[in-house]
Image (cartoon, rainbow, N blue to C red):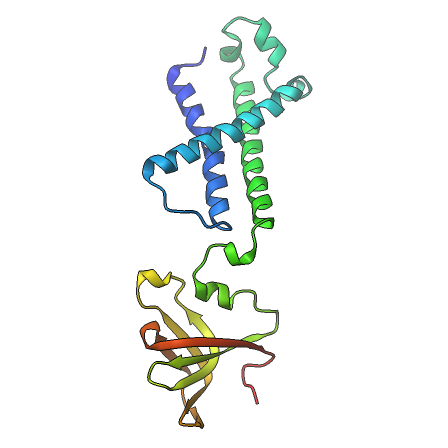
Length: 214
């Protein structure tokens, strides 16, 4: 029989696919905050389910894989408790295959969930959602309406990806920079302008072929 510490280590490894699934899922699906215990329970349940499914698949094909250096389920059932100790390489190979299959199942399941989730429900701040999916060869021309009435326009350079609840965020526009106020639109000789979200009333964006519109 395998020592208890080794069984414990195998049990922890069996949770890895669950962690991979949850991390992959959270990239595509919004999830509510969880406590540490809730996180552990989700990882455990997902890991056991995925690893158990992989173990079941292995059991169906164990005799086909056995000649390649894997554990034979039939021999394991007929032999005494020393079978695993006498075939350590078979144990390692079998455990590795089960874990790899379980991890692949986790990625596949997360991918299926991603395909069924509309983009509007996927994670990310509103700014990320608004500026995502820019067609190839296009630029995002952004108009930032300030609280004081000025409209600042320019090519989107970058922005903070934090949520609004995390505090003020900055948006960076690159040249050409236009400023409109009192029906007058002028070009500013600037390469970059940084605008804080606490100064912004609203933001508009369009896709343009070149960074400088007519």
